[in-house]
Length: 167
Image (cartoon, rainbow, N blue to C red; front, side, top):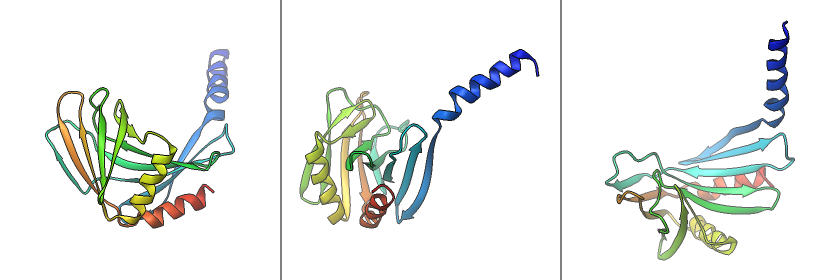
């Protein structure tokens, strides 16, 4: 093996291998998938459940596939709600999340939206676990809009499983 090939293999082995991140599909409940993420740098995992809309009303033909996600951070034992809109959100905008008769305004940054704080995360999650449908209304940076409807069937089982694999 010449010095050049040895150096390239050494660099790849040293800089890439130790920092690998693995994402694994654990299971599914109806429209919800449960994923586990671990990396070699931390003893703590992240897990998340994700769902895609069953209906979308939008005038954006180039929109990517949106999703609703709840992530659990094992280290802190907290959950975070996020929504990927499939497009960049309008700057300084909020998206509207309707869960039965409850309304939440999530803050946006780029193409994701989050609850304002941990308390609101827990309020949203409590309502999601009891509801059947959630609707999300958002506006894009280029003036288009979307109204997405998510079926929440299976969320309670998916949420429970996520907490089991990321205690």
